[in-house]
Length: 106
Image (cartoon, rainbow, N blue to C red; front, side, top):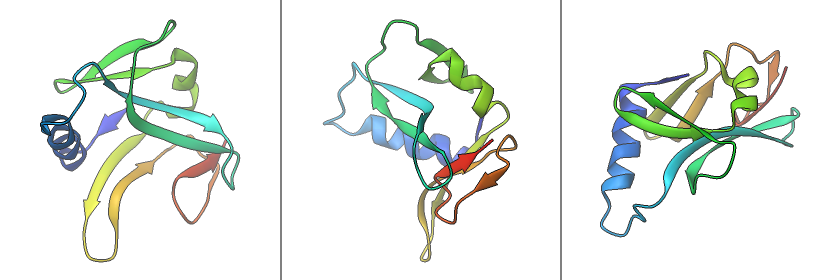
C-alpha cells in the first residue's frame, strides 16, 4: 500500500489538531457494501485484536491482515482542488469500481 505525499501531509495535519485523540491510529481496510461490492475504510480507530501495525514513510497505520488481499499495491491520495476534495483510492486489484471512487469489486 502506498500513500502519496499529499495524503501523508493531510493525515499528519489531522493528527496534529489539538483535539485529536492520541490513542487512535489510522485504519485502512475494506468492508462489504457500496455499489460495487466492497467499500474502502480510511479513518482513525483503536487497535483491536488481530490488527497488524504497518509503517509507510514514518506513518503508522492499522489493518486487518485479511484485507491485504484486496489492498496490495493500492495508492491513497489526497486532492484539495475546486472540483474535488478528499482522499481517493487507486486499486490495481479492482476489476470494477464505481463513479464515486469509494467502492470496488474484485
